[in-house]
Image (cartoon, rainbow, N blue to C red; front, side):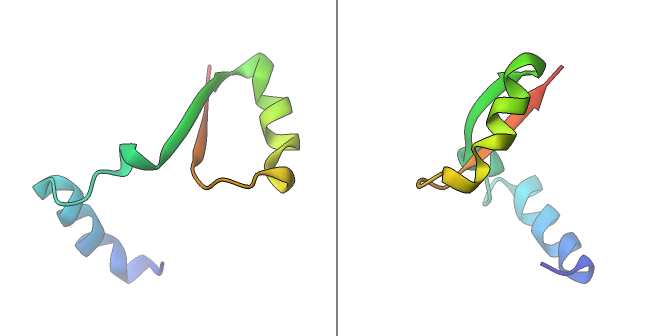
Length: 53
């Protein structure tokens, strides 16, 4: 996605037509973050992992 497409995407999020939280597969803490990063090459399912402090 290019930078010039951001306004349209953000407008879809603001309108509720696009819900990026549906893309989040899991949330992990900092201690698990290194493991999650190492697993990136081995993931078979899509989704985003959020590393939270």
